[in-house]
Image (cartoon, rainbow, N blue to C red):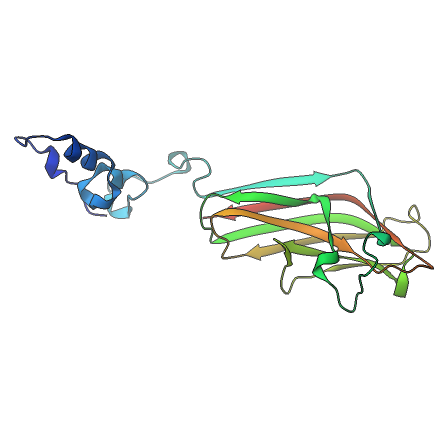
Length: 211
């Protein structure tokens, strides 16, 4: 940005309220308005020898984030989605996992958003030796080309072992300013002879965004 010059405020000029307003607040006036200092300063405006440090940047201006989690066990019964089939893998049959889901607001268009999570889960009973599947979702749709966690049948029962631990992450570009959601969701096949249940234990979901 070039140097700011305010012709309306020059010595000898007769001032008017509209000219003063333009000089102070009109971002369409370019370098003829002090509004240019509100986020439009560039490196050419920096005094030689003066370096910008973290103390000069307002909190949240370049990045932000949040974490959620839960430690209370959550049991998911396959009767809740009786029509789900692994062969078709319908998105609508997946249910969100509390403690591994977030609705969040991005204050600006982001170059990168990083999601990361860890959870412990185990399946007991169920059809085809696989009780349930956990997938990451961005909004209402699954995350494309993302890994999944399949929970196989554990004959020892819910207290038999600790099942599986899943640690994952997702680097997401192109998210725009506004509300979004990211979640881990679970679904599984229902078998009347062996209905199956999955237990999700400790879990957390974090996100960090960058301008």
